[in-house]
Structure formats: C-alpha cells, structure tokens
Image (cartoon, rainbow, N blue to C red; front, side, top):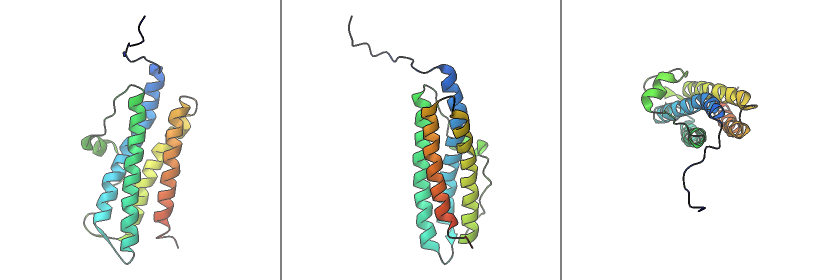
Length: 161
C-alpha cells in the first residue's frame, strides 16, 4: 500500500464543525463590520487628540482584520465555508451605524467603542458556547477577546474622566 494518497481525511465531527461555525461566524461578521467602520471613523475624525486616535483606529482596524481572518480560517479548517462578503456583513451586523461626515473625536471614540462592544458580545458568546464543544476554537475566541479588550481600553482612555 502506498502512502501517497492525498485525499483529505475527515477528522472533525460534522456536528462540532457546524456548532463551531454557528458561534464563530458572528465573530467574523462583527469583526469585518468593525474593520469597515473603524476605517470610516479613522478618515472622518476631528479634534485636538486627532493623531493619537487616528493611529489607534489604524491599529484597531489591522487587529480586527487579523482576528476576523483567524476565526474565518478556523471555520474553514473544520471544513465549512464562511460568507463575509460586504453585503452579508451589512445585513447581519448588530452594530449601530456611525455618524455621517466629520465627527469630533469624543463622539467617534464612543461610537467605535459601541462597535467593539458588539463584537465582544459575539466573541464572549463564542467563548462560553465553545467551552464543551471545541476547546481549540474556544482558544481562538479567547485570543480575540483579549485583543479586543486591550484595543477598547486604549480608545476608552481618550474619553475617560
């Protein structure tokens, strides 16, 4: 018998894969919404602390994109597709829309923190629900939660009293 068989082997229980996708897909959706809205806030920011917040928003956008990729790749690694096309994200995000046009930094920060909180809600749900279902996927969600908490803290520090 030859060891050259390259046929993929199903190593994941389909129920585990489907359950994992059920909890990580909203994470991908909310993170992709955060990417788009974070960049929108970045472009239209105004205020005395412009440069610091402007740069933090760039960091947040890069982090959110990396984490969305991490969660999406976990779903795909389990054998399921992910749909994070912009129309799908827009139709499924729970985040509130951002203000139009130029926005003062305090208001913009509060709006972006609201977006982060929506993403964190999806992530924290995934952390809870994946505990007994798939701990490797739970680790992905925990890593994302840790990073989002940090980025939220860095933004919040600009408006904290």
